[in-house]
Amino acid sequence: MSRLGHTGWRRNIARTIDGSSLDGLILDADSARPLYLQLYDGMREMILSGTLPGGMRIPSSRVLSESLGISRFTVVTALDQLVAEGYLKSTRGSGTYVETVPRRQSGKPGTSSESGVATPDRFEKLLSRRGQALTWRTSLTLNDGSQLLHMATPDHRLFPVQIWSQLTKEVYAQGDFRIVNYREIMRPSLLEEQIARHIAVSRGIRCEPEEVVTTLGAHHAVTLLAELLLDPGDTVAFEEPGMAAIRSIFQSSGCKIEPMHVDASGPDPHTVASRDVKLAFVTAAKQQPMTVAMPMKRKLELLHWAADRETLIIEDDLGSEFRYRGGPIPPLKALDQAGQVIYIGAFSMTLLQSLRVGYMIMPRALAERCRRLIQVRYRALPQFTEQIVGRFIEDGHYVRHLHRMRRIYAKRQNRLLQILRSDFADIFEPPEFASGFYNLCYFRDQAVDEDAVLVRCRHANLGIEQLSYYYANRISPRKALLVGFAASTEEEIPFATKLLRRCLDARADLSAAMP
Image (tube, rainbow, N blue to C red; front, side, top):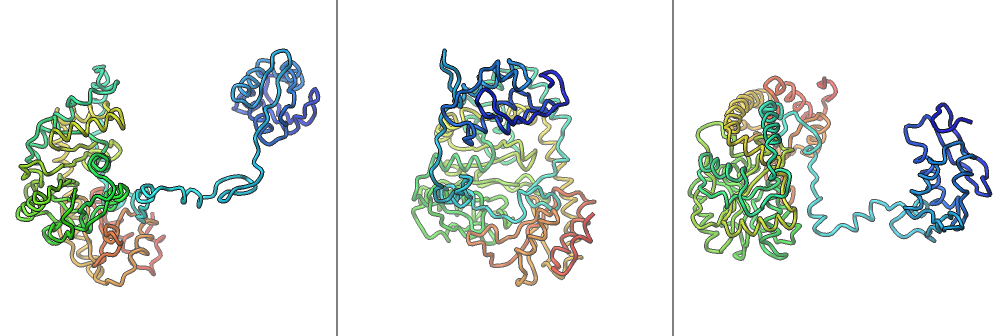
């Protein structure tokens, strides 16, 4: 029989070698897996299954080599690995023996008695309250790869790949130790310096680089602030409706959530019942999901309300860069004179979501504490990516990219609104022109089954969401859909809206509209 180095044989060992049964051991010379690993795998499985019992003496490497028709080196390599992992034990002058493997007498509750494999129910019971709060998310359409009419995704096809590639090469070629080692966390990075400059012009926020703290995105920023500022039992005032994933972060920290109901001016602090509120979370420039821009009067009311209670406000400026009519709406932070507002921004909507780069602006003393928390929890954040984003802003590419995206997205929204107002007039109330990435479309028939519609949208690859998803009890006073336009081209929108129309008609054959 052929030895190692020759191909074309597959050996099923079905005999006893020097008193040891290796029945069932298979070696295949044509396999991509090396022979020593095949021998290792086979003997390991036989030891675990009890085919090779504990205490049994293993034949010498010479005997195994001759009997199996493989090289002695192959045998020794496999046996050495089994000894190293504790499946075999080698005694000088005596030989190599199978180690005794502990065996279960009977299955425990929550496992299969035959296989010993844990059932899913067992792991559900093991989840902590924090884990349960963080993993409840049950959106029917989002985060499943849907692209058409997606309400929360930019068009990655507009990303300036060539410019980014050139900056990547330049940053790497510089060989700056700051991008390959843990950064000196207490000193502002290039990106933090550039954010401080950019935000002063774009959002009217005056701050020093030492007040900017980079993060892995907005959700990471909220998680850091929850760890830094909140104890179990603390009260957080949260928008109702509001971002469900952010709400779950506070809930997972053991906090009590007090609803701050949203009206035509945004979240109203006077609807918060409790006076003992440690943090408040708001989206002022474009309320998520209602798209309301908070007017100056409500902003001042909110700041005064917070000052009376010594409450810190977290402001997420999500999507504020994409206002298509008139100038930008200043954030709440721009009016903050007392350091009450912690501002959160991110580049997920303007660059690529997968970059995971965001930032916070906060009083310097709090920023120092937050930097120390990052140092303890994460050592440092991705310096290479941050350096590229910093250069992207510094060289003026970011501002030009934003201008281009606004022009394109405005045209896409106009195209979507034309279709919604004409072809969907019998289904939706006329939607309004909005900032951000989506239009809020209220159903004329409030008896519609939203869940059924969303399931059909998911099957049609539509990234649409229902308004009720953002309410704490998952019940919206008025049923509506969030229909996106940013991620779909003007040519894709007519096709996508035909799919949407079929999803809204339960009697339609969805496959007829598919390409």
